[in-house]
Image (cartoon, rainbow, N blue to C red; front, top):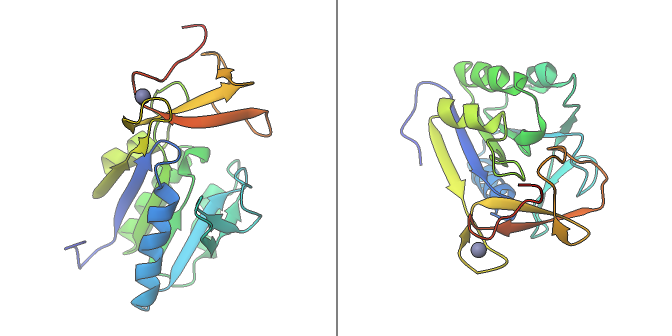
Length: 194
Ligand SMILES: [Zn+2]
């Protein structure tokens, strides 16, 4: 995929939920592993869908990961590294802006940095830090899901609360709430209170 040979770089896998971002991340990590490259994987502590210390996609494949506290652990990511050439960060939308500088530093240090995350909030607005990472990255892939209403390509994440569209004033990140999510296209994505 790449032609860069003398420095590190950042590549971003973005898109809505159910677009296969983590599956694509794991595919790239598997290729690196086959080539004998050492890999380090990080994920935020708020994502506990697949157990404490693994990155997993909806199809069940998993990878051991360092779990990082988004509040105060981001700056410490480089300290976990022990010469790994490839550094992967999953669910990057749960990390603060500080992640941008960490990724830039790792790339400047000669590493391949692969970042996966949701680039829009449930409101369909830019979801930092992904938008800035998309701008700074050497390589960007934006994956689509399939709209669960109409079957068109989906770029947005629909939050549902009790089966109804979430309210526009709901918090961006909900942890442990009784909500569910669907992939939707621009036309089928809706918010209450808009
Ligand atoms: Zn649709």
